[in-house]
Length: 434
Image (cartoon, rainbow, N blue to C red):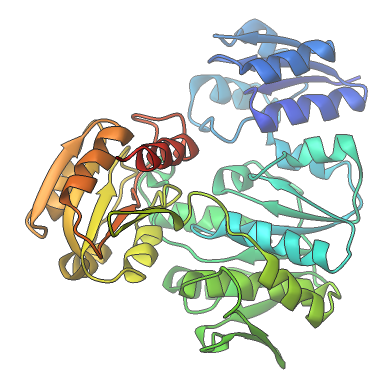
């Protein structure tokens, strides 16, 4: 019986604890912060020991193996102590991968992961395959395996999760795109972040498939130096048509779908390519595209109030995501941005802001960088400290026919628990406008 210690009691940690217990290991969960009540109840109902508000080194350093939350960086002293002692530290994805015999799609990228994961799952489900979705969206992979073993899994994978893999191997790996993101976690070196994303290919075999966006500059520059054993399939902009997308000889019409903008067409291209590879009928894929509902907090239209459209793009936590959002906007945007800066380079946004943004409402504790970068490009720059205040200011500035766009370009952790909470508070404030 192994002594498994799990650091972090969120969805991935609790899922890993349940799977470890199911496989007859001794399990202890430690969270330096507080544990959500629903997870506490779950641990207690299964008789799994835990602590919160601290890490007890004496107990943790006795582990045979440690499963680490993706949110804990490798450089924290406790992780260094574990490594120094020779105790393996892995990700929940890696641990879960030991206990399945299914086919897996692994999806990573700086932008579009959640939409593509949900869409690929929906297409496969519509086609009648025995499939489940998990990873960084919905249920953890480990939890999925405690409930029922499916023939197919579609997993969203962050760079942090990929950093903790050893043998995990997706049958189909997707690298949607790479743009600067989370550089604070990667010593502010873009090459470290790119290398992390490419880990999705590290264990793939000759019979596997690697789908990637061929025209992404970071992928195109890194790929020639990076050995990929899987069949590498480049997806290009030329596959996007006026009506939709072209996958091989198959055309799929996106005009009757809720997928809008080039980035969503690319998401559909990746998901449809994978679905076809796994034998989904084209008619089922078309039906799935037309019945798919995009994820909340990603270019989500909330309401029209006094002739102004309010759009929730809270999930846009990096520059590239905001670029897509602003590029899809007409002129006359009141842009709500800001939060915890992740080492952003705002240079790519300057032309779009100059052309399309009339007012910028900063939503964050420290808006110095936003003001220095964009203050001179917009007619109005104001600072706010809550979603409600940001919406009130934006409503006062917006004119009929314009759009108020929450697309932060930053993490949410200065004022909010996560981007979902930021988006929900924005929605509530919009719907409360008089």
